[in-house]
Amino acid sequence: MRTKVILFGLLIGWFGYVGPAPAFGQEQEEVRGAFLTTRPKPVEQSKSGAAARPSRRRPKTTATRPSTASDPLPATSAKTSNSGSAKATTQRIGLGLTLFTRDSNGLAVRVDPAHEFRKGDRVRLLLETNTAGYLYIFNTTDGGQPVLIYPDADLEEAGNFIQAHVPVELPSSLAGEERLRWLAFDEHAGAERLYFVFTREPLPAVPIEDDLINYCREKISNCPWHPGSELWAQIQKHLNAPVQVAKMQRFGNAQTSGEHTATTRGIGLSKEDPEPSLIMLTASSCTAMLVTKLDLIHR
Image (cartoon, rainbow, N blue to C red; front, side):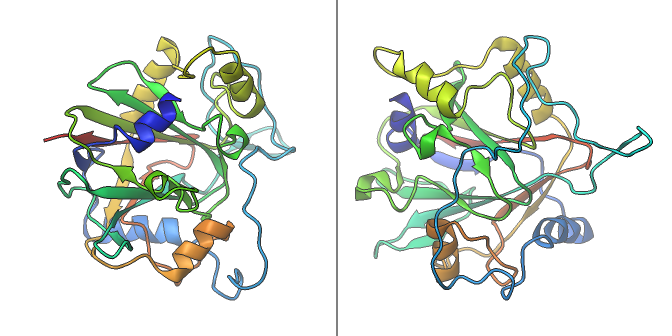
């Protein structure tokens, strides 16, 4: 599949965050606090004992809407009171991102997303959200047509439901082969851009789970799903919406055992675990979607 080619072969070059400028001072602390405050305390979320990886399929109680050309994106999130008036949710949508690189000993260590990589370097993304929702990742190459690379029809039953503060690895460190556990930088030039879309409700216009599996099953060769022009235009519009950003300046530390356990066993990160390298938070609690991007450019 093209997904695997992109994720495991063509993610090349300079990896840099190209979203809104990071917040500074008090504002940056407020962004960190708003995102991290919903992490459970260590005593509330023990990492001992048996645990199973969570299903990426949407909960059965989640309401879905049919896809329509005029409404490809979910409406603004709101709660309705008994009186019939809409009341905005109090929690803003947040996405945390940490970039790891493989050191000479094979360990995963934190690296600045603005670091310039060379041929042979390997990296892995760790994504964390502050609320339950649905994660989509699109890729463009040299400004070309966008393609959906997550969810993947071959992974996790094509599901993309994310639980609050339960981290997601891309690619997974549990992959059967070492070469599939990292994104490898090779010699081919090109500009890769990743778009991260996190939303409270599924995007009606994007196939997931059985719909995506069936779509790919009907394809003779590769299975790239491309968003329509209207959907992509609206995603681009959300990309320009106000987003607050906090960036951690400490890098070089190895991934902790707590982070690894949380990732591989589907346990939520606690307040004692390291914070993400980048935290992106919508400016308004009424916003139902967060869209941000990362550039990977070959030098």
